[in-house]
Image (cartoon, rainbow, N blue to C red; front, side, top):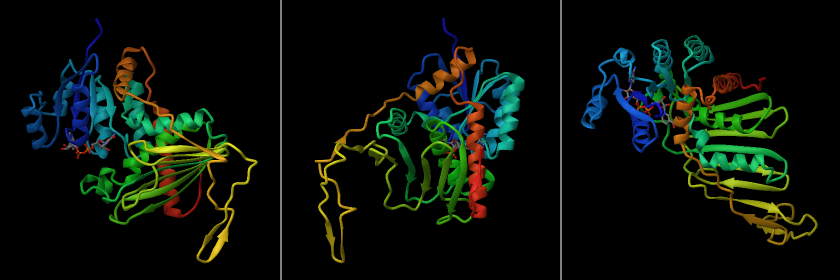
Length: 350
Ligand code: NAD
């Protein structure tokens, strides 16, 4: 019979409950053993739901039946909880961002190496279907050579009014959403990043960034632009990709979008556009005589594969999917982005 893995959720807020729901929806061999939170209200809620609530983190770590500790606390607690869990002989999964700096991340990696336990991070947006669809378009060269990729996440609610507002807790949108979209881009584009240029915004919050625009220049790859905004009452598309033979766009979370590709370079279908003050042929829209509009080749995914991989990695049946060196590279891009934003300069990278 396959081994059953017992998980405890540490930090039973929004994301802790997301993990609860995912596990309870059924993942073979994964069992939710209990919950721990420093605050009273989440503990009460967990008890009412019928879960075992541990009285302390030490009590979680002293339970020999616990295999996996999931850390879903605010960002500044991840490091200490993960290291403690690893040293207690547990496998540890941290929510993103793994921690606040590359130095802290190195301490976590060292603890994992010393103990031989699995330490990984819930970079769940590697399973986003919009990302996987764009990755397929890129990998399969469906637009010809791609020279520009823009990945944006836009909202208009400002930065949430909780710990995400405060620097000490690892607040700000770079660490919140940046970590996801940078991780996705680094998964998609192979090779060396030459330079990083970033500007940040402070529209609704003076203490931490409430948005940013980040340009990564690759040695042998397209220009990539990554942007998070929280004061965008009209949002730009989630993805916009330009190749020499066409353009792909994904407009929203529901994967509305299209590919438009050239079908005839020879024919001149330009009907000049006259505006109140001028005329342009260059910017005249193409007609169906020279382009084709196609549906996106949607790629489907199953986020439960994250936990399946964690269990396989613990059992030695597979490599962990979210790897330490990948986490470190994303962290270093974020640090370079902050340096660039502070100095106003392009920062050399790898
Ligand atoms: P939240 O504020 O809703 O919940 C955090 C919980 O942790 C609270 O119940 C709080 O009482 C508890 N807590 C705080 N310090 C603790 C400690 N030392 N020990 C035990 N419990 C403690 O926050 P959230 O939105 O659930 O975010 C939690 C983590 O999940 C963050 O790191 C966040 O970045 C991450 N997150 C990830 C995703 C994703 O898609 N992967 C989405 C949202 C949040």
